[in-house]
Length: 205
Ligand SMILES: Nc1nc2c(ncn2[C@@H]2O[C@H](COP(=O)(O)OP(=O)(O)OP(=O)(O)O)[C@@H](O)[C@H]2O)c(=O)[nH]1
Ligand SMILES: C=C(OP(=O)(O)O)C(=O)O
Image 1 (cartoon, helix red, strand yellow):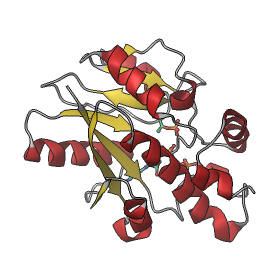
Image 2 (cartoon, rainbow, N blue to C red; image 1 turned 180 degrees about the vertical axis):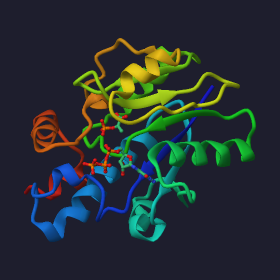
Image 3 (cartoon, rainbow, N blue to C red; image 1 turned 135 degrees about the horizontal axis):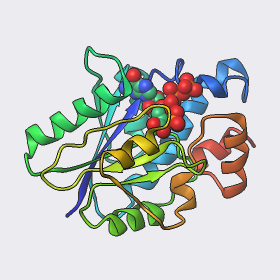
Image 4 (cartoon, helix red, strand yellow; image 1 turned 90 degrees about the vertical axis):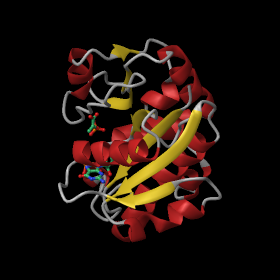
């Protein structure tokens, strides 16, 4: 069964604060948007993905992501401002439309993501509650609910351990592009070596 993915985003001015300084200060929001644009471009061309719902702190500030020529829906985050609340809000909206929706949570900072790695992860999960840890092994880049079960997102520091404790299966394939989230300047150097999408690449030409 195909998955509906929830992708959260802070205001691009506020997000990715650990990356501040990687580009000139006035270009920081552009970098955050470029990371998301490359993530979403891969997501919408992946097999086994039905809908992509971006839950944004400020939908207007990320509006250009809907103009990528990709099918992404953008909604505002709920009153409770937290990452897990944003995921739960997206899940509730998707299930209001289709109570049978199978929901997943994906980070917006995967600029090297390939459609192939995402589809391979969805295939390996095969309808089980599952997650993909980041390359450091501590964070989570993708969480998938089992059909009929709540997403129960436990993102935040050490989320890989939290998701495993919640019964999610750690996916074992290499999936290098799906494990390479960008939190720090070191992560940025890593994804640039791996090969980023065109939006992020343009910022460094
Ligand atoms: N809508 C929404 N998105 C969030 C919230 N907190 C984090 N996110 C998004 O979730 C994703 C993962 O968060 P992090 O990797 O910690 O990114 P971040 O908070 O932007 O980064 P730092 O400022 O460096 O901690 C990013 O795309 C964030 O924009 C929130 O409260 N609301
Ligand atoms: C919030 C998380 O992301 P990061 O480690 O990228 O900050 C997480 O992995 O749960």
